[in-house]
Each structure stands twice: as structure tokens, then as C-alpha cells.
Image 1 (cartoon, rainbow, N blue to C red):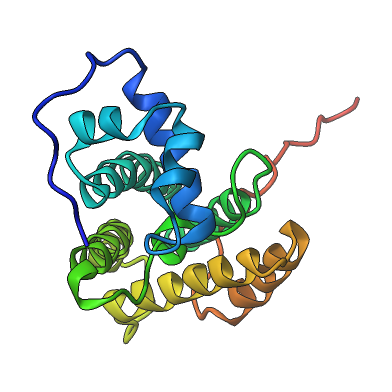
Image 2: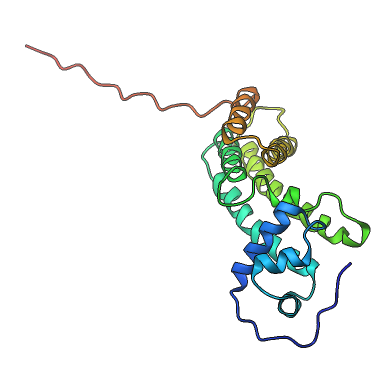
Amino acid sequence: MTTNSPTTGRPRAFDIETVLDRAAEVFWQRGYEGASLSALTTAMGINRPSLYVAFGSKQELFKRAFTRYNDAKVATARAALDQPTAYASIEAFLRTSADGLTAADHPPGCLSIQGGLACAPENAPISEALAAGRAATETALRERLSRAAADGDLPDGVDPHALARFVMALSEGHAVHAAAGASHADLHASIDVAMRALHIPPPQASPPPTTTPTAHP
């Protein structure tokens, strides 16, 4: 249940990006519904009136924290996908994702999965925001693979939309496993299997330069 914002409060005396990052970690660890206002304000270093003045409600706080998180995630995904081949793009996407899911500077897993796959009806906007965030990442992947198909970089008969969904499903599954304790090495081992299973020719190494034998008298 959301609470309306009070009309009065102290002037803001905190860095908005810092408190959003701290709130994101609480939501990440506890999920939206499990994150109490006490846990949020303690982590953010602000009181409840300041929270309501700055963000209006717990839902709006979550949406802003998630938007900041997801913008960075989508940017990272697009950078990983900027590879010369479809094979290299998929591998970079999966390995970059695995690195992020197991990084030591934030909770394991992914906020877009752990934030609230299932919520009470009154919190449906939270689940919808998370789904939209995951869809944005999948769209970036689908666009890259569609370009690959148009360039002849995917084998005949490979549907770029279905391939994008497959890669996303693997990445999202990794998020669940990382949250449950799977290690960096565990995730990369499963990526090794996935890359061998994909029927996409890996990028070919450039042949060594040929040299012309020198004639001797």
C-alpha cells in the first residue's frame, strides 16, 4: 500500500544518486515487498519525511532506483553487443552479465529478477516496471541479432527473435542461480556449454600472413 507524500518536510540535504543506489541494494536483497521503510531509511541515511518529500511514496522510490539501475544495465548490454559477429556479441553479453551477477560490490543476482517477480495486486506496477526493464535488455539483444541476420551472419533458419529470447532466458536463469550462491566460475562454465551448443559459426581467427621465401644465390 502506498502512502501519500506529506506537504512539508526538510529541504533536501543528501545526494539523490547516492540514496537511490542505497535503496536499490535494499530492494535487491529483500525484494520490493520485503523492504521495510525502516530498512530503506536506515540504508539511505534519511528519515521518513525526507523520503516522502523527495520521492512521494515507496513505489516511486523503487521506480526511480530501478530506472537508474536499469539504464546502466541496458547501456552495459548494448556495449557488450557491439561486437563484429553475432557469436561474439552473444558471448560478450552472457559473460558480461555473469560478471555483473557475481560482482562483489553489490548483492548477488539481479534487481530486475529479485525486486519482485510476483507482487500483491496493489503492487502490480512494480512487477510491470521490472518486466519492462527486462524487455528493454531483450530488445537490445534482438536488434543486434536482427542486424546479424540481415547481414548474413546467422545461419539460414535461425530466428533472431527466438535466439534473443533463448539468450535472455539463460542470462535470467543465471541471475536466479547467482542469488542462490552460484559462483562466477559456475556461471562461466554454463556459458561455455551454451556457446558450444549454439549453431552459429564462431569468429574465425585471421590466417597468419604469408611470406615469400627469399631466394639465395
